[in-house]
Length: 114
Length: 114
Image (cartoon, rainbow over all chains, first blue to last red):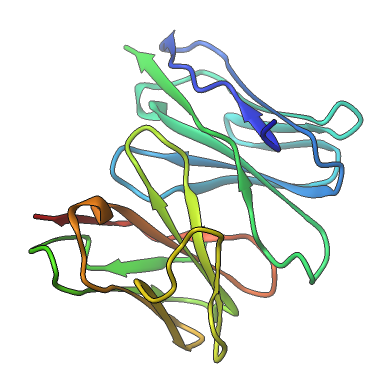
């Protein structure tokens, strides 16, 4: 079983829709949770960075972490064609011995249709 | 967010030659840099972790004599693919972090070995 599970999609939505992207994980040591956006043939771009449980909002993006369920989500409101990309969740434990090594999900390919 | 650059952005080489890829953190000092490879429609696969001034730590299955990593300064790491073969063709991405904070990715280098 993978440490991080993410539905690869593809996910196709109309412009203006609310998009929900999710990841589940099995390692209870994970404390830091990230969402990256990756356009085709580009490096991943950090969208959201959260610590432990809770919500974080940045513009049209909201990240939620539920550590009790080992479940994280990224919501995109008023989705735009420019949001079409692959979204990767990533996470890591706390502590210096673990370093910054991230565990990634498989990525969800999102297409927003005009 | 912080800026990480890679050079070159793409390279084509003949089988048996060596290729060097540079990764630079432009506006912060990177205590740790990571090297990933990514195949089409797949997630990132960590190859190695490098800390400035010390030897890189390679992931299981990654040949350290084939993928030479040098982290000579807090802003520069290099990956050299030695005696490249067509199966080494891939998208190579570096990332950088400062003291276990957010991990920022470069734009990637597409390597094609003929």
